[in-house]
Image (cartoon, rainbow, N blue to C red; front, top):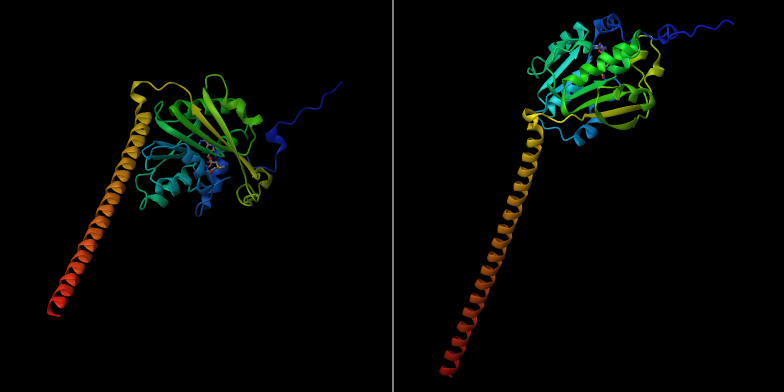
Length: 295
Ligand SMILES: C[S@@+](CC[C@H](N)C(=O)[O-])C[C@H]1O[C@@H](n2cnc3c(N)ncnc32)[C@H](O)[C@@H]1O
């Protein structure tokens, strides 16, 4: 009996570009003009990011940044420790130029996610929009996926986050996020868009089906215990809460003082009025007395 050979994904999808191929991206970025965001933009994702209560001084890594303006908008929101990488040198050059005047402290580096040139535990959060999805498109996908996941995990601090935005459902992603050696607490959100995004893969003759209406956000918190030097984040959160409490007490106190002042003023006014009316009635009484004496 002869079995039909199962065609591998890469061969089958000849109409798709190979999104894991660096050359594909370099060519695509040759004529890059203006920002373009895959899947979801900063505005759509920012409520979910806000729920994480990241301190503004968090170290942020955005992998496979492309020409997205996600990090720029986050920077403008106060997150200034912004590191951004892509293996396409030309798009990194373009991004540096785009930001050198207005956001000169943003860092853009040409780097492969499979070999990150960063320290262990360097980042509070790693953002990945559509990059892991690209890695899974190519040959040796599983091998690359495993290296990718280990590298990302390595640079996240304990209790920090890997924020993955993917077009693939949990059945196809959790296996990678829960691979041996990774200890993440994972929450999945679903984003349903009104329309399919018409650009992106479609733009260069690719198949638009890849840009689905539904995207998934995997919020993966690294569950390792922080070591002694890495308590700052929690400490900062406590300090923030403490400051908010103090502010509230101060506000309440001020309101109380204002109220007391108001009451005192009211009382003074009242007293003045009583004094005046007393004086008036004494005046009119003595007038009356004088009048009757005359009579
Ligand atoms: C689908 S685009 C997403 C761009 C951007 N994150 C966004 O949301 O708009 C994928 C990007 O990841 C980059 N990329 C893919 N694999 C990479 C890798 N192994 N290392 C670094 N960058 C990679 C590509 O060059 C491309 O810019």
